[in-house]
Length: 325
Image (cartoon, helix red, strand yellow):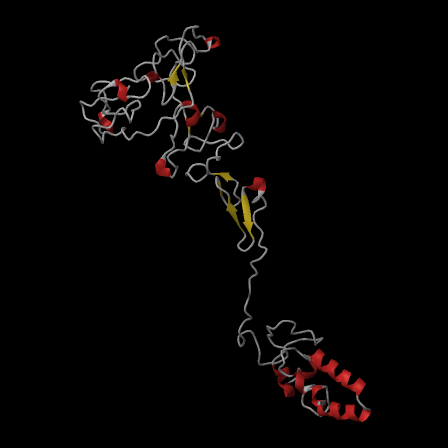
């Protein structure tokens, strides 16, 4: 404002007669320092800027402009710029409001490493991509079902119970991936995993991996991939199949031994695994291993057979129910 007024007067002076300028200037004489006013410049009193020429008692300490001024650039027109009013102290004034600038708050240095997160400059926090968590998004998080279908990889190997994995290389140490070993869709749905996710698991030691036992994959001992000797698919874990003369002889198996393998087939969910339907297995709804109740072999998948009073009663089946095996 001050600059604009002085500029305007200067422009008038350049275009007016000396007499005319004198009249205009005198009309606004109280805008500029005078010796007749109580203030060095009455117009500047209380305008929001501190003026040394007004900063004394007779001018009411420049109208308070020099004391606890919260305005922007309050001290651009003064040199001393001190609060000289003896009646003003820290207990008589309201503190200036503080403002916090949220833009540009830095995130942890490694927030965006490997594209695991994006920095929210408004809050200074990382927004993690699926599969990662923590203040800097550096912690792999494939344990709660929201990590996505590509959460476990060979470069981000998962622990037991984590998923989704596609191969054993996606799991740490000796762990296996359900998808590659006949245990498709083996993640714990109660943790939030979708029903078709595969998780890393610790395989049980069957003792059937070195050809020392020709009757190894029988009874309660179901074999994993490459283990034998099996006689039928029922001797293999999950959806694995029993092969024919396919065992690795370099491991000690005989040339005519049969080992379990994965043919890539994922059995469909039949709804016959919990004993809730006594007529569940039909020729149009073929049951898998342990499903029931079946009435004949042609109600079981592939070369499975319909057993007799063999369903697992702990799952809800009746004692006389027949399941595919």
